Image 1 (tube, rainbow, N blue to C red):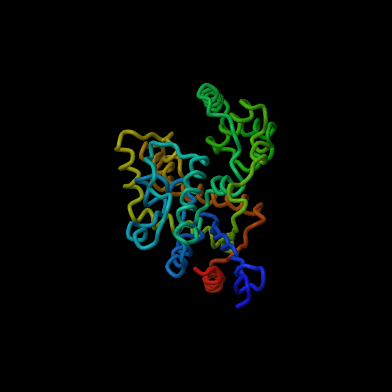
Image 2: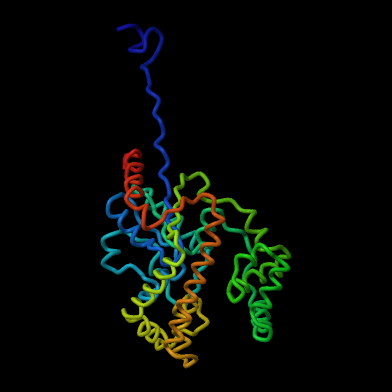
Length: 332
């Protein structure tokens, strides 16, 4: 053997360069309410090394089961889910808390050499995670009380018009009767002196260096989406949705003003139980509100340039196969 070892005269052993392992990706499956995201995610999770991370502002609450189409305990026992049933309906859950919880879940999933699949349609949460969360002023109880008093006199559409003058970009994403978001956007404008939309743009994503795959699930026929929404609400009512809301009212620690009880469907059935209108009217209003929610979600999604649109009636077989092949290439 030459002096100096296998590397030849005057040289040590030849060292092979070790390539770093590729970073594991984050997958996103979003779409309007009623599009079938949960079913798609479950079918993939049963055939690929992924774990589901919920991106849904209602699924975080314990006791909100039927009206949120929450996966059953048996399903969650067979497929790993995260950020479901993590707080009481008396609590307020925020985008900031979601980002912290989601990042923790993503880190744990990656540590197990698996891939997180973010599933849900709460676009405010998803955008906060993928684009960064703006540093916003803390909630001001006196200012909120002032805005509530003005809304009681003038109506939330009037405050929405005021927001449109102060922050047109934020107002364009908020419905004229979405009291919670109108109030927060006005609060930020008045407390900071800057539009909410400007503060939100001056952010960076905590996942900026993470490979991302992003899909938007939506039927190409909007009438079909509306039919799906109506059928799903009918199934919820048959499964005992009204009784679920009645039980929540009877707890005694919730009111119609808790964020959990302002969720679509819960709000309308709560109003029925208060005697504000008949059950048939409550159902009609709930279905209409769900369609409006889907419309608002689609407005956000159309502005999302990263997403690949999928039609649930045509795309699934190739979608599953492509993802499984992609994960195989990563050694998963």
